Image (cartoon, rainbow over all chains, first blue to last red; front, side, top):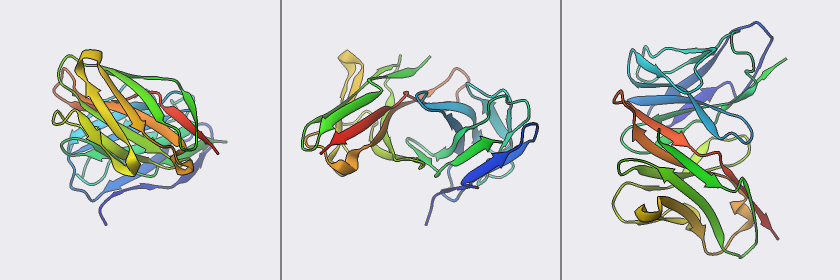
Length: 110
Length: 116
């Protein structure tokens, strides 16, 4: 079945550590997105990519990094520079109109 | 900047009553508009979309929305609420930024509670 796979579902990070969230899609979509979700704030765009080897900062890119070496993959690294990383992270992809979402990764700093 | 505004972060309805979730958008060009639903600890699922065809859009699970350009609104409705409709609903707009990149911007969400 086609879809978007995010892993892991739950992730715990110690302060000062970098962690990488995985996002893979087999929908053959060109565009991919990372969003952060906090209670009462909706979804805020972190990074997005329209094609391989190209990506753009979203509204809250500070403390995050991404790569797009393959069409299918768009991993997100949460660096130690992100001061408040505890949140629910959602990856999405799209072709022409709507975006399709993965099931999310819940990151907690311990 | 393109944006969407959802009025009411929480809405409560009785089972069997009308559901009305409000969304207003700002866009200088005809937009693509969407409604998504999210259940706890899950991703977002598309309910319906407006892509400049019919102004009344029907979606899954009995939901529909009407695009009203004069009011810049895209409100979501369902004639009769079911307990399984309890979830969080997001309105979203797809637009192109000044750099020619497609972006999807979301509202802050409305949590729907259905009272038995």
